[in-house]
Image 1 (tube, rainbow, N blue to C red):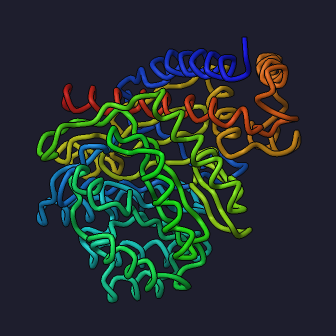
Image 2 (cartoon, rainbow, N blue to C red):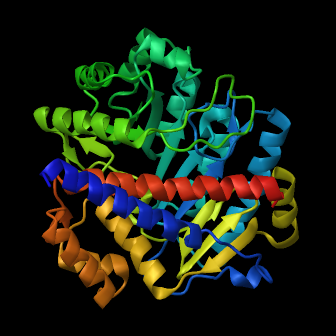
Length: 417
């Protein structure tokens, strides 16, 4: 068996195991009371993930929870979100990082800036990260984000190809406009991240390489390549939802690895490539535990996986009643917790034995040591760092885990919780 066949076999086997574990991981139960959600238990502080589930136009490739934008519903959600954040702060948490995602967090700029001002007042030392849609990034909003101290702005461009953007249901802004927007943003934030999509059926290696060339020409130091994953179908996407093709994704990921190496970019995660040191990446990388705020947000803390209500009305009722949007939770078994943390550690390109122990919160178990030894024997890691051969395998594993989360979101919407 040649190296390519061995890598493909390892990828498919590892992804299959993650898929099985992911189904168990997301088999959540209704809490008996809000007491199932802990206060700060000491040790390292978790991050905070804030979800804003509104988009002007639902995208057919999106795997995340979102609703078509309604201004009244969005303003009500922001109000409930502020109450939930205050409740979490009242339980003793001092979040070192707050990541605001969606949906489209920038869809209602004045409410977003008000939320960020609250977070800055209550958490003066926190790193603030915000996802954005390029069409929302008018000068006034950008100035406000800079003023409140946003350290990382992620811009969801997806592609610079006119035809591909049209197929994605995103004809505006046009590629020339996208380039002008990004040029205006350069130097405004400590970390400016470009998000590109790959594995669309119409995307050739040449189209993907051209997108990478544009990112390089614009001088963007951090680029994340988000693989097409099983989409969350809500209706109203405008075009047919797109299921991913893992084999095509593997081929395009090789293009990313080759181009990144040729341009001197190093991976800060399996999906993110940087040309400068010290940039801020996803909250999962630096903070293995994180709490959730907002409709449809999920969190992981103190060996428990949490999910807020995916219903806007249900979320608002829960926050009004008890201060939290919590709808489901599950305590993980020790091996499930370790497997989840190990996947996140390797996704973040690993580190030293000491940093792995810190990430796990203690020495690795015999089960983890055996998994690492097997990965080393296959050439997937060196020490506890992924190799060039191992990155596609971890890429597949992470995609499968996100696929399990899409199943969870679909189930929550179907069951109305």
